[in-house]
Length: 109
Image 1 (cartoon, rainbow, N blue to C red):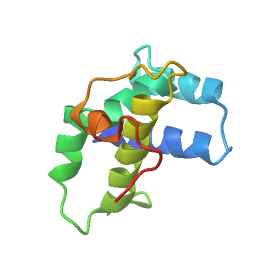
Image 2 (image 1 turned 135 degrees about the vertical axis):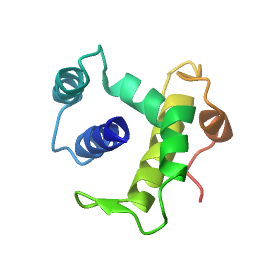
Image 3 (image 1 turned 135 degrees about the horizontal axis):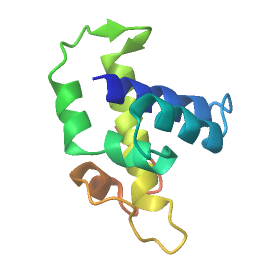
Image 4 (image 1 turned 180 degrees about the vertical axis):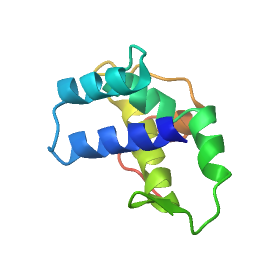
């Protein structure tokens, strides 16, 4: 769950212009000890491990100001980005969630 929260915080901070992509990458690498970047973070959030960890949480879960619903929204944003961000339309991730957003113009609930 630590990686899920970390990835959510990093992605949210970049989207809110509170952190640059480079700063997010540095934070992620220092915190995980692995070669994570913002792209890796989004790939992780849209993948099976993160989705399973979030699904296992009770509906009223909240920790450090982050709710289960916020984590779920972060996975959707990440999946949409990795499915559609490449200029040539090539998906940046093969996750099932990303496939749902491939070619879509918006994130739909």
